[in-house]
Length: 278
Image 1: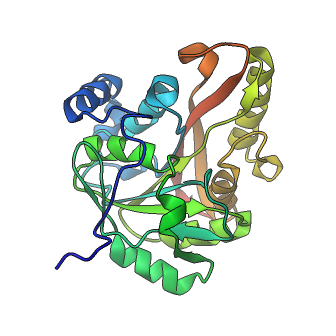
Image 2: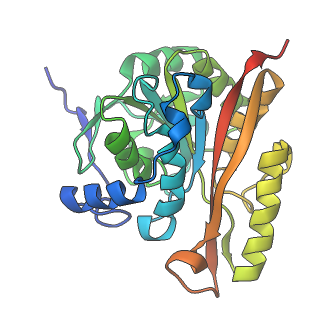
């Protein structure tokens, strides 16, 4: 029997991405067109366990996000659940939040929420709680949903929104989920905000170096709005062997805006190496 919170309505369809299903499908099909051939290999270590991708409107950052999601194009057998984690932009709160819906609306059809995994996680981490009001207007997670629905239509999704939280708390949640078979991750973050073009390029190059060299402790909100999620993910390298590969780095001055004041976007693939750290 359906309850009142059955489906989380899409909040930014028609604003950040097309609300029309055929238009959205057409855009995604074109953006995701070049699949990654190594993903067809049966070795699941060749499929990134996590993606870092930007969450602006598709005309600005959708191409950069698509280049990351392409790496999952042949991975529907392996990827059963996608954890989407990003920062809260509209409502402030402490800790981490999720929603008590069963499904997430997209123009391409609803995604099922990983309710069992969500409920187990909430029992284990007291700073994770339901906060529908924070999630209701938020775009940082939602812009990832159409990519997932297009590529992995049967995958379940677990949305996790970060408020005021420590990197260690994020790491603990991600490390718990990392042990689950078939669970993969999208870390949602843009890079620098509202600097002139050349200045933004310099800041974003610095951010990329921090991410790729494992110096995540120095990340802050000036470098990436979703820095807490990135920090929590990369902090797991203390326990799990991770390899970070850069995919693309651009800004809105390259894609669909003025160069006077730009927002930076980057995408990375994070692979789990076969050997485990002792």
